[in-house]
Image 1 (cartoon, helix red, strand yellow):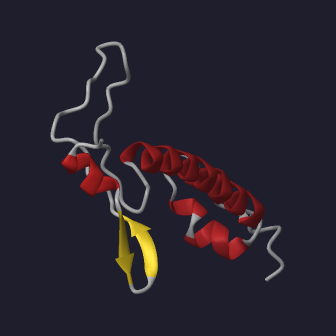
Image 2 (cartoon, one colour):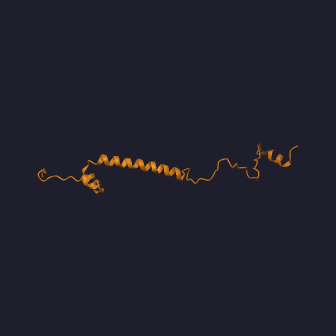
Image 3 (tube, one colour):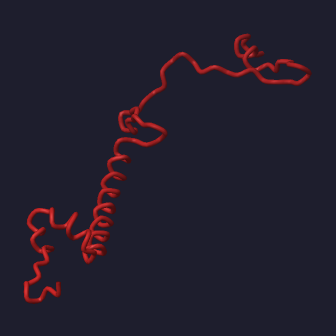
Length: 108
C-alpha cells in the first residue's frame, strides 16, 4: 500500500514507553522561487540591532542631546563661574559674556 520509504518515515517509533513519530526531512531539491516574489537577503545585526536602526537612533539621540546641552547652557548662563570658565571661551559669542564694571561703579 505505502511505498517502503514513505512508510518508514511516517511510522511511529516506540521510545521509552511512548509513541513518537519520526521527523521527516525535506527533499534535497531546491524550492521554487518566483521572480515576482520578495528577494530575501541576509541582514547583518548584533542582538537584533541593524546598522540602519543604529543610524536612526544615533541621529535622534544626537538631536535630543544637542537640545539638552543648549537648555543646560541657557539655564546656567546666569552663573558667573559658568560665564567665565565656559561661555567666554566659545568663539563669536564669548565677548557677550564679559562683564566690564566701570571703575566709578565698583564699590571696592
